[in-house]
Length: 270
Picture 1 (spheres, rainbow, N blue to C red):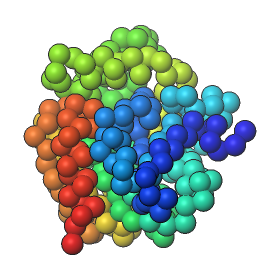
Picture 2 (picture 1 turned 90 degrees about the vertical axis):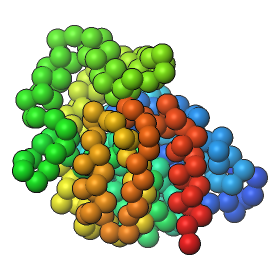
Picture 3 (picture 1 turned 180 degrees about the horizontal axis):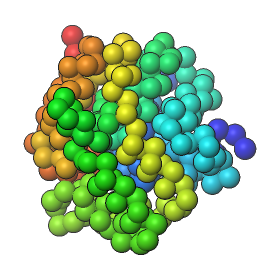
């Protein structure tokens, strides 16, 4: 099976055949459809690529290898294979949400010639607190408890995490969509991806990234506090930090116009 089918790759062509390429990476437990309110903002100006990570969305379940995906490196390898499979040799504008930010950073550090820049929506290089110098938002025991809930009550876990990720969104629309997406994910794959996501520590990888980046931080985000965005800004060279007046962890779903405006401003930078 080819790379397109393995990751359910969707390509939205632009009006101009030589349009720059935007590649979107979704967050844990999500799928490429989470970007559907952002892509219309670039349909005339960019060729847009969406895909599902192994074990997520409509990706080929046979391709999911638990050994490969015990760390985010396996997902970063997938991203690079997708770009290679599409024949992209440079100039890629990557847009990642949550854990996809770390995946994109790992890929850009390994193959910097492929990437023009990175837009990081709600990034976190490490969700675990490491006092006194780093506040990631969670104690390790809290995250272990969340994963234990996955084993005991998968549907209950999906509802709890969906509400936590969405925050106080409008009438629960985002939390319901997230919970449904979490529920539809294969539990075995979800558990592997969850552990790789929530226990990753990619802080040491940040100084090795040379690609220009825009950090879109949510003002009120229980998963990635403002301190995390500030930490990334300090440790990512050639980065810009923009704090969005958003509650929750998914501005691209709850406030897509803010994300589109920030991206356009970043792409039009001097």
